[in-house]
Image (cartoon, rainbow over all chains, first blue to last red; front, side, top):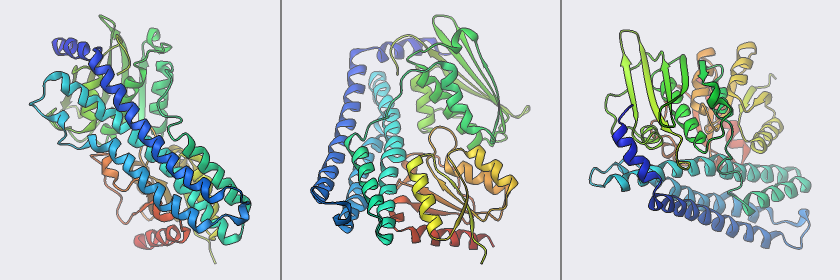
Length: 296
Length: 129
């Protein structure tokens, strides 16, 4: 098995109390900060609209609050969620012991998940509501202004709603990662029948590995075709093998390769390898993941 | 006068509806809107379009840049405007793919006035003529 010694050390760290607490604290801090910033903006909105009918709303002031302030404040939250995505961050430091590196690596990955969520859901909807109000003002549509305010209240009163996911079967998790690539890439998928319907807490991690591998193959290797195989191996581990027809070779060094590498490293407890055959013009990624323990 | 034909790719439904409505009010012809890159590619293969407005972050799977590159492969003359809510997308994607030549990149925050987006669409089309 790939680097089984490193795997067991990392697995022990991942299941330690310190690791679990560090990750929980980071999640809570990010969530609390987002809640705080959003409720501040929501309070200002409430003060501007309370006791008034939609036609009396001070639209220009509302736009100032959501178009400028909310966006800026949520961006601050976003920066906090993504500061860990710096390439020269603590997680890359060789001076840290393995325990600290495993924790920092995981915080980087969760920080990225938050950043994508705040960007893709929260800020995007706030911007759309601002656009809707702007357009409604032009045509004097107070019903549309009212609907936009309602939408803003909904977003800002529970900004983290929808973050994270409930375990779904491995088959569904993989489908959710592969389907968006339809039309850009041909995929030959094999999942062992005994794993297919399993709802492991690690399925999201497996999905993240698959997603990252595909985007690397397409963007950096210009692949058009991949074969993905997920199979059980000894000691409650699974192996993921992704073979692609990339025309461009991947970088040789594992170190400092960005977030994708950190995902492979963290999720597999260090048990992954990337091989390139220039003669056959293909790249093979192998990742071993333990189904023991909690979600990473 | 011939209306500018635009397709819109945005995974967030409320945002997609709002942008579609606002662009239609500005006189553009939104011939297709979708949350799926594959559907947009299929549509573009079968129909004549002038420009694509694409969200950078489309959830799991390809990004807006992947979609833009695929659409350009099909039609090298297509005008492309990428939208993002993120001031610095490099924070999301440290090894971001290259934007197709002549594409416009717009931060959603600056689109609270729809005229800004319309001007960028026109500029993206002109850049490819």
